[in-house]
Amino acid sequence: MSSVPAGKHAGPNTVSSQPAVAEPTYAERARTLVYLGRIGSLSTLSRKQPGFPFGSVMPYGLDDHGRAIFLVSTMAMHTQNLQADPRSSLLVTQPDATGDPLGASRVTLVGNVLPVPEPEVVEARKLYLARYANSKYWVDFEDFSFYRMEVVDVYYVGGFGVMGWVSSSEYNFAQPDPLVDHVGGIIQHMNTHHAGALIELARAFAGIESEEVMMTSVDRLGFHVRFKTPDGMRGARIAFLREVRNREEARRVVADMVAESRKK
Image (tube, rainbow, N blue to C red; front, side, top):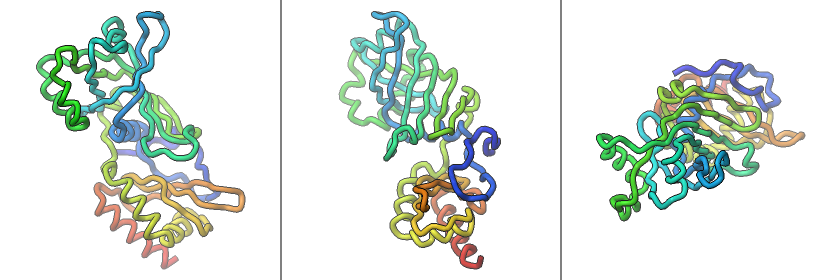
């Protein structure tokens, strides 16, 4: 998996003079965010007020192509809207965002939400129940059925000044980041137990002089930090020495980087 061209990223929000470092593509970041999410805002086209969007809180499952799967009732207004016109969008926001919500990641999937074909219902049911076990109590009610979004386009926003369109084919073929299920644990561990190491890494690999550095995100290619300066909080990205594929590889590369930083 390659990183996106530099032109698709915003300028670094950092006082460092280091060159930009590789990051996952917008497609990968969109897939990762949708994977992490459990509930989105589904906008359908209103039957009652033609041309107006109608918003609904919508839990969703997810298949291997990043297509959202919905379990909906015929009594719901959004279902009635979809039966009249399948065009819709699903907004998913960063689940653990703190601080300014406009600085958090979000993604909008644009597509057609249609009934899942009968031969694929068993798999859709399995994927949905894996996320929402309690839905087993109503999944077989006569008025409930599975719908799925066929993605037409994707718009990703990674925070202030970081945004762009992702084609449906790029989105479909991308994969969630391999560290996605361990990000929270890695960040908490580093910030709680290795605050001094983060200061050393920021100094050695990003040219940052600060006595307060916190990891804010991590992926297969590197991590982001926030650090305190006399002018306020700033951010920077630090690349791993090599790409990682799991939590253990991430642990090893960070240890190698700490050892190298102490030689500089």
